[in-house]
Length: 281
Length: 261
Ligand SMILES: Nc1ncnc2c1ncn2[C@@H]1O[C@H](COP(=O)(O)OP(=O)(O)OP(=O)(O)O)[C@@H](O)[C@H]1O
Ligand SMILES: [Mg+2]
Image 1: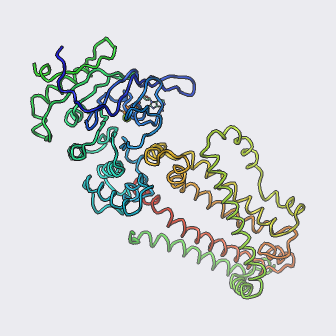
Image 2: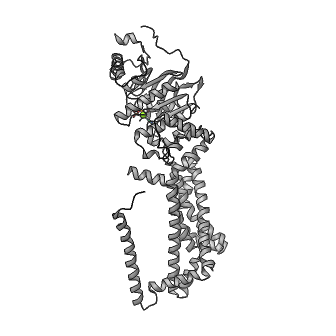
């Protein structure tokens, strides 16, 4: 197998090493959500983790974020083991209506993580973050007065306002309509590129993963392990029509799709880097 | 911000018309009654105004209301404080469930004779009884409200508050639980008013409850009814005040409910 030349030379900022999570229910019933997952995210890199519904994606995100203790393995951020939510993490959750605070206005939600800053700076940061997500004029409304897509923009702005080093997103666009979803994807790509933000996107949508990421990790069904690692060599800025019509895009897509639909019977987690040449043949 | 629709206007006026009809019936029935047990409304209202203009206002009515408010505030504060502790620190749950189940089953009015025997018909006794009555619904609703806060809010809070348990409690859990705490306060206020009256019916020599009881003993039926009317007015006034505060504090909750239902 050819050695990949697409691996980013930037230092690793975030890594998962042999992560496993088994939930133990009240009556001792066990659910093994994550089998064995390892991956790395380099500084400034956009990584997507794609996996079928119910495979433990949210569990994985909560583990990475330090919100949930893994049963096995370790998460490292900036060369330190993660035991609680590290400073420098901005997180966008799957369900915006359970993550934005309904008693706070949009502005107050966005300023929520800036408690320790002086008022003037808080206002500036919030305005800057809201501009990045193209939201203006709704600062004094409540989140529940906005559409789903706008609410998820507020959630992204809340994360950006803290000037995070890593942006973690759990299926952020799963519950909005198709057109809104495309707009939000383009916006995310733009923000991530402009800020050079290290981004980890968790999704069940293969197209979304390939469209946005530099590298994609493909997860199996529960208990999940990494089926495949794909380095996505598509030019940036990516374009909704041109990128998705690029033959390489279609090849990546077929590769990932095959991996999920026909996983090899051998369940040992092998992280395969598919070099561009191999995908094209 | 909605303009009142024709429907909502008629809806409300139907209620008021019904009240007027009932008042009319009272007046007619009162005039026909010969026993003196049921005076007509006009006499009751005249008597009510007289009582309100007399020194009963400063000797009986206002002190009663002050005791009710003091008891309500003290009991609610204790209920919220203990409720937050029990609701947030779940480790305490196994220790506290059984004692709380037992204690809340004791009806507070039944304790009034005992309290009078122990402490006499004093202000602290009355305020204490009222506080105890308000305490329970506030405590139970606070515990429940805090335990039911959506874990999603708490996870967001853990991300954006550097994980300090106290600031999560203050900035997220308490506001999220406010609707249910308010429900507890509303019940607590109603119970405070009941206990205000009950606590003045044993060995007391002043107060609204005493006024009603004393009129009944003296067979002064019109004054007795006037006392009841004043009690109703006090209740209406305090409830309206509470609603006004509630409406401001909870506009987000009503708005959200209005949108999702
Ligand atoms: N707190 C929990 N206790 C017990 N089991 C859980 C818990 N949370 C999740 N699970 C189980 O773990 C498995 C993975 O759940 P998870 O929510 O991580 O999957 P997901 O990939 O995010 O799903 P979705 O595609 O629906 O978002 C599921 O079988 C779920 O029922
Ligand atoms: Mg999920």
